[in-house]
View 1 (cartoon, rainbow, N blue to C red):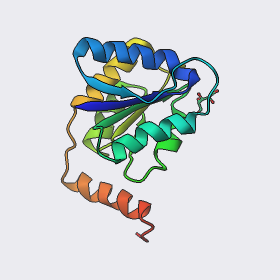
View 2: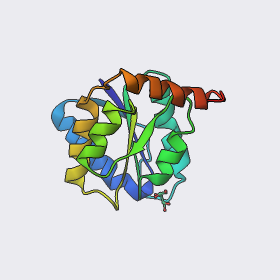
View 3: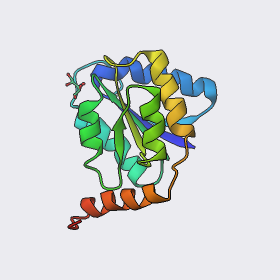
View 4: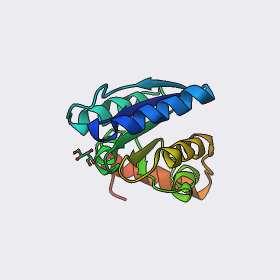
Length: 149
Ligand code: RB5
């Protein structure tokens, strides 16, 4: 498994602490920035990590900003991305089981570092249930493709 990580300045520290957690667990990742705390524009970094997931070079994305909201909006504009802002364990689990989310978004001002690590663990280890949920995810793809559903 290979993860794509990104954050803006508002979640630089959260990204660094998630990297430490992944290092400890031996999970491979690529850091798509930002690489310092100077103010940057979150769509650029969310886009880079989301693109890597959409291209298939990375399995999941972990993308953070102050709130998790801006990066989720940016990531969800990349074709093939289903990004979910997660603030608790249930959301991290359910968005994998039902939505087949491939990007988790979190806010540094919303979740603690400990909770973020837990959410990452849940997100990357929970399987999509398929079945009726596949039909619904297919409808999301249809919307993305401009189809009238
Ligand atoms: C940056 O100030 C902040 O707007 C950003 O981190 C994010 O929360 C946007 O949604």
